[in-house]
Length: 81
Image (cartoon, rainbow, N blue to C red; front, top):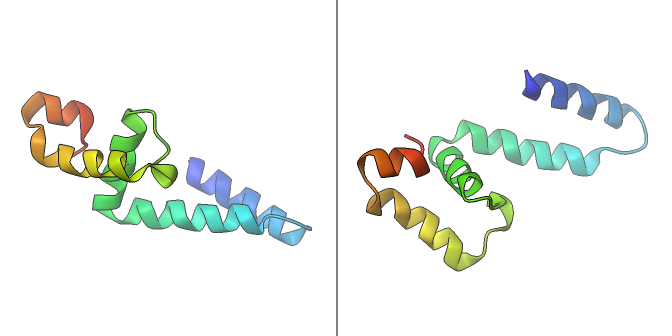
């Protein structure tokens, strides 16, 4: 699994000289994966080709509102259930 691979890389980097930044970024990703709402937001942003960690405020509002605007097949194609 990808998560196990990333965690093993972080452990090896932590044993050496670097890896703190990667460790912090992975902690953020892991926290997002545990929160269903944030996970859905990240998937929706990714579906638009946008990095969910660096979304402009207006785009972020659009992504959040899209869960309410779209329905049926249009919603499932854009906003994960």
